[in-house]
Length: 197
Image (tube, rainbow, N blue to C red; front, side, top):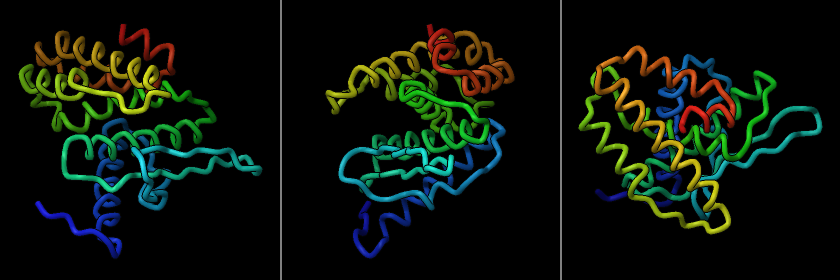
């Protein structure tokens, strides 16, 4: 597939993908739409990152930097991660709740599974296991400074989705699967780590 570069073509495509991911996350978790992620996207030189700062008026300011994305799993995952971070911070801000960098990474790892699994009502063990393997078992960490955080988040998501696969997907308990994913989204870092143990 040929990707056009320049004149804003690539960023338009990434913004459209980001909007679709945001809509999917908000619908799945039943979250109110607070802002359009595409209005906050800029291109950065490295991997995706959400820049967050508290403004002097008490508001939260955000910018989502996305690299120029190739059409591969890693590129799609970077968009999902960035949008997950954006939605999570925006949701927590409207609830007057704080979050940690590790909490953001854990949730983003789980959101990759949720988005890429597609319709959870038709998810079977084989597809779940393949997705889990691709997302969490065949990874490398390119940022040595943040490797520990990424490794902890990756391992937590691996354990959590493996447990969901055994207890809910294998038994076709899709309502329980959805409820557990919703509860995971709502809880903080320590509870996320506990649920993933």
